[in-house]
Length: 234
Image (cartoon, rainbow, N blue to C red):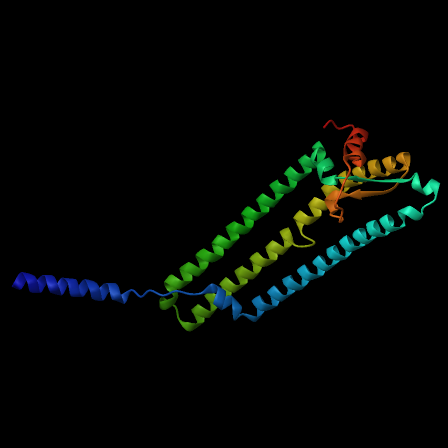
């Protein structure tokens, strides 16, 4: 009987000790939704996305309208104008055959991975800082808690700024991508311009840009001829 009482006492003591360690949870999505700076950042991102999407939609409509206008007026062109043919190219296909484009893509991806690894490392540091604070929170006074919380907020803000520096509209990766790709795309454009002049083409459409065409005759696909002019085998 005494053994049972002792065992019961030990179990009760163990349960009391376990209950003393409290468990809790947080909903970060809910918390972020209550933060005005997060709501403001989300609004800015959505506004920027809508802005650029509107520009893209506008440009696509212009290309589509240009094509429709040309098709409508084609029958009214004189003999000289009729001899000016229309054709198309697929710049995505052309670029994919260019070794310098493949090399540029690899450099951009490497740079992207490099900076992404830095960002992820910094995020882990913030997460660890928060976990350490949660573990030590009960042993801190009010001043210490406020200081630690401010340190976490400052660190989070620093990570956001770092992301902007690397991946923002004017960020390192964006600028590097433009620096690498512009000469390559200009080279392709010059080859297309030369073909247009030599072949007497009035219009050359780029299928990679997405104009609305329901039929494409392969006879008028100049993509391989552009590659020939660039000296690239396909």
